[in-house]
Length: 172
Image (tube, rainbow, N blue to C red; front, side, top):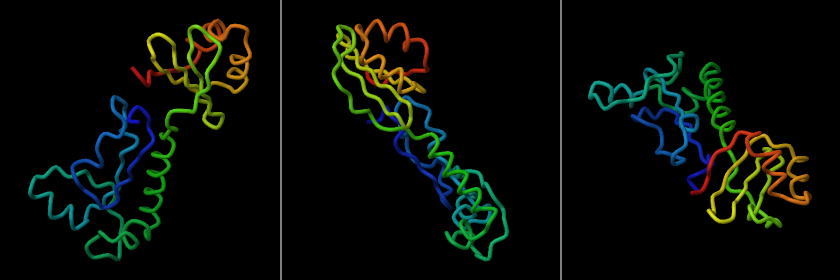
């Protein structure tokens, strides 16, 4: 499950040294772990002098909250900060992807199964022999359908998919 970018974290008022653990092993998950912290957040003010490695502040906007830690008064009730929060949520959402796609067996000596997500234009291929699985991005549904109906799925794949779309290995 950790081969896919399916989880994200947006930390609000949490100046810990890092937001979240690695969410996807071996993958860059920096766009999935983001934060919004106020310079005057009471937790940050207490922890900074102790040298505990807090995250940098992302805002110093005026707030009616004297300790700059309340969700509504500091982070969602201040238009400038609310916009920053929404931008961070959108950043995480844009970098998420579906978990392994439901695959169907294909009549091929090279390819064991193929799965497709037309919303994200993702193609998952499991190969026979090695058992390796790869994810191909931005593959049009017409290419997937043509591959499934080709007289030789492997030949069609090699000519029209492999090396034509960005890919990454998702299983050994």
